[in-house]
Length: 151
Image (cartoon, rainbow, N blue to C red):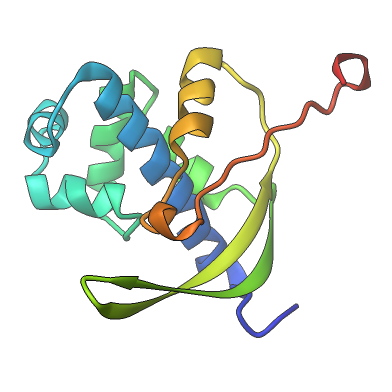
């Protein structure tokens, strides 16, 4: 485990929140919604929706609102955030500049296992990437099948 690697259950949940953020960004973009539109549809404040898309912690009732918006049973997002089928590896810092200020992003690689239920959404997520550091070379998704016959 490297020094930059997240440790413990809360760090794994934080990484999963970044994945959820990417999913919500794609969900919103596919509908042509602004942040305000998405917040209105979910019946949460725009700042709360922004927190979701930034991968920050939100209250349980917000996650329940996301379940409803996505057409999922209550508790689905919370269970996904608490799922232990994630491996995390620290990759060190990525340094960049924005508006002549130095920006540092701690990078991690995470491995998730799951089933694809919407191939179009997955393709869009792969194309767009996830997280706030895409302009610095972060947020890349690599997908592989566990079915050897598909390789």
